[in-house]
Each structure stands twice: as structure tokens, then as C-alpha cells.
Image 1 (tube, rainbow, N blue to C red):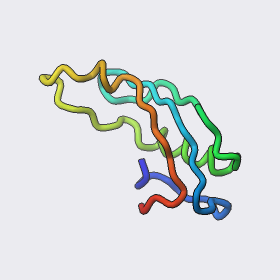
Image 2 (cartoon, helix red, strand yellow):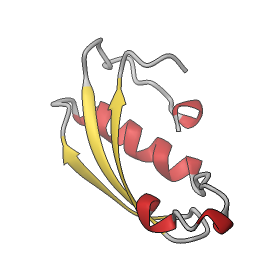
Image 3 (cartoon, rainbow, N blue to C red):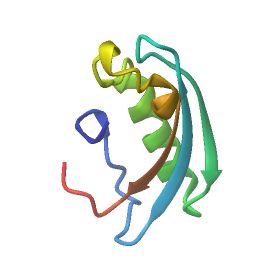
Image 4 (cartoon, rainbow, N blue to C red):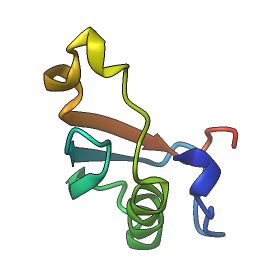
Length: 83
């Protein structure tokens, strides 16, 4: 996701947006909810867009039967994360 993120110039250190992302078994993103805003609308929109661009997300191998664990992800997206 961070590889797909275009960091906005307004993204200051310490900003964190928390996203709730729902997936289907192929790893495709079917919904993204901004669970907790960073307080910077541009930053929030940029991290949401990065998740969309990264779809489908990698999942564990199907034979491990872990999809239910990964069906809904809680993703804290941090401005100070290295890309």
C-alpha cells in the first residue's frame, strides 16, 4: 500500500489515519472506511486512494484457510512511514 501512496505535501510527521478495509477472497478491496481521521483531509484521501490502487492485496495461501482472519483489516496509515 505504501508503494502506491503519493504522500501529500501537507502530510506532517505524526499524522495517522486508521482505515477499515474489507476484502473478498481474491484480495480485491470491496470497501474502505475511514475509521479515525488524521485531522488532515488531504492526507486521509491520499491513504484511502493508495489502498484502492494497491488492490488486490496479497493474502495468505488459500490452503491455509486464513481468509476469515484477513477479510476485514484495520490499517493505521502513518505519515512518517518510509516508502
